[in-house]
Length: 288
Image 1 (cartoon, rainbow, N blue to C red):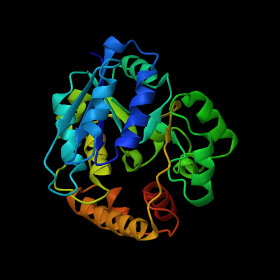
Image 2 (cartoon, rainbow, N blue to C red; image 1 turned 90 degrees about the horizontal axis):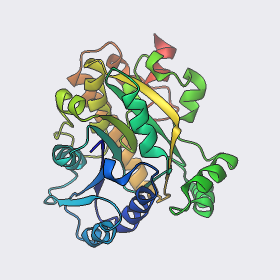
Image 3 (tube, rainbow, N blue to C red; image 1 turned 45 degrees about the vertical axis):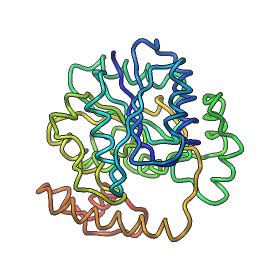
Image 4 (cartoon, rainbow, N blue to C red; image 1 turned 90 degrees about the vertical axis):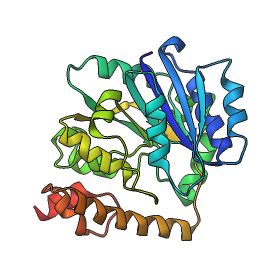
């Protein structure tokens, strides 16, 4: 077993179906990867959805009691049960290009050092008319075509503006861990365990992934962006109140992370530029 794909979910069986559909179409030999779905206390038909795919791919379904938001705990459970040397973390609703897992494996095996790979997520952060446009081109059964359409329509990853400003060589950024978002990333399983896995004290939206990214950074993992490893974020818009709440929770998480880690980079988490959340590298460039 080379790769374990770990997917947390909570009452999103429709989105889970789309993610699993894209994983069936991977070019990587099916004997080399498994899928571990961890249900964070959901009550929908996610178990049945997983069972529908078991004849096509190696997929396991785990369930934990609903004790509030515990995405970090769910991912830790999945990583603990995983058998692959490398862990690919995907959010429920991410559809992966057919070559995605093969490229993750190729990139990791080509390097003698442990590293973190940030995959590219088209349509990530799309709202309003962009989200409606994305719905017209996304298709879990033909992800390559959907990615090409997303490119043509300019439905890029929400982090693209940072790549434009700072370059694609994120290992040269002062704080590459700030874009370690678990929508689509990979790392060595032992590196994740060695760093201590996700801090389960983060029990509201945001922060637990970036905080783990800091510990991977401290443990000398290389950080790489690979735009060839593509995926699409299936549009599922939150309402304005939910979005406002996420912004608030993200702000709380940043201050919590600053208090936890004594790095010169994290000392900039209380400064704002007023552009987008999770723009630490831009803040550092502006102030440092």
